[in-house]
Length: 311
Image 1: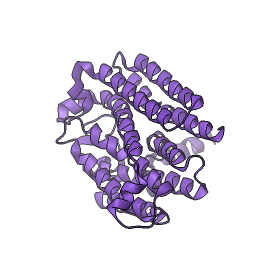
Image 2: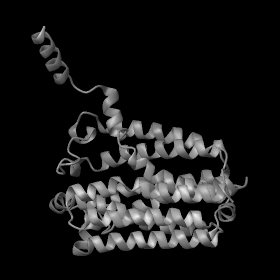
Image 3: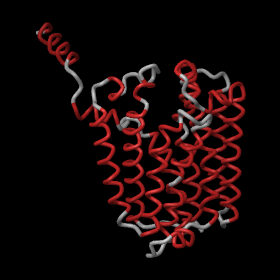
């Protein structure tokens, strides 16, 4: 009996992964921290734009849309980086890089996910639909920015923050198909929130890049961790400070009160904890700091939602 069990276990271990498991690995289904980093600032902006709960329709559109577009972005990123990823220990076993999924299959998966996300956007309004094209273009450009820009995380910051103006457009937009309609629906403070969020993305993605710095130097990849050099930890903490300063100031100007500021303070406290994780630049510490960042966004969102609910 024991031998039979052992044989079955060995057979199961020898079997190749299922097609479904490969696609789930492609879109990082088991790593929700990625889409949570996009979701929290988007929901914060949605609540601010609606001056409270925006309704279940918009919540569903942005939650599902965020998950779908992050998954689609993973497909495009893995295709673009497949030659680089095989030289990086952390990414060498990704399905496209390892050859267990083909380039065409990955792109088809990404296109399907993006189309479903676009179908959700079509249920909103013209300004949001127009902005979605810009969001898609930025998302497609980012994987190639790493070849030419010294701080490609700036492009990622715009891509990961574009849900903010889209949230304002969805909550406040009208029915006109024009740039002026976008300008009316997306006020200046929405773009200010985007700028502040960009600094947060710079902070956490630099932590992420610090994990792979040795591999990226060897293969010639450009990242903020390499560009900042020995000032990397200082740059991360400065970006955190700018993020909290901008969001704190704008939120106060928009009428958010003490509960919101408590959320900002809770996020800042987490950033200080991240300093203790990254100051020695260990791979494990930097990766742990990166993976914990979604709690920073959660603290800010909780501050926004609770402050507006308890007015």
